[in-house]
Image (cartoon, rainbow, N blue to C red; front, side, top):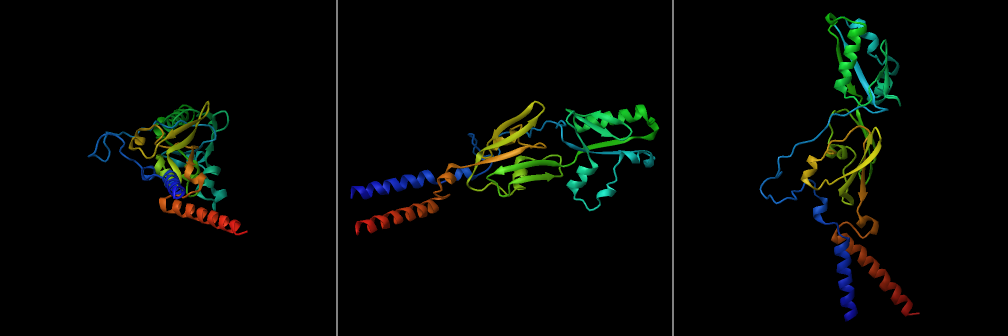
Length: 266
């Protein structure tokens, strides 16, 4: 009788420890003391201007009163008519080389490493006015990143690289575009591997806490790698819920009991 009680207690402990807590599956929880507001604090989204890095692809367009005079500065993409948007950006865009330079027709090499797109617009416009055009030409320059590319690995629906044609993408949008984090993914410790001029750094954010919106890593940047670790419950393999854990344990106990009975009859 004591052995049965001990077995029951052991099974209960295993079930409790192997289940994934409900609070670990919910995004944006209020973990403070406030009980009335959905978002208890005056949260401000933090996003510093992105500064160009090597291997980035820039889409540069120049407009003027006489558009023919700036035609050479605007790639037409006629050689890749059947290309996708990402392919067209690769062929028509200006790729930042390992020295931080881009090569622009008639202007030559221009260093853009560490500059924002707005700063590059002013640099190109000034260079054009100083070297080739007069103010009356009404030169208008736009510089944009050719898509925001990032990679998601680990416990997500569809791991891989994604290109989004938006200037701002937060972590929830990024994850939604790769198929969501399953129950077995660790939402409390999502890692973001980010590129910096001096190398890569790993940052960790908690998606279950509403204060994640205050994080400087709430908005992803080009070339970010998002990694979601699996919870230990997946490694143990006992199940995601109490029912699935109980089913797994019951199967194991049944197999052990059958094995013991077979050997006892020999």
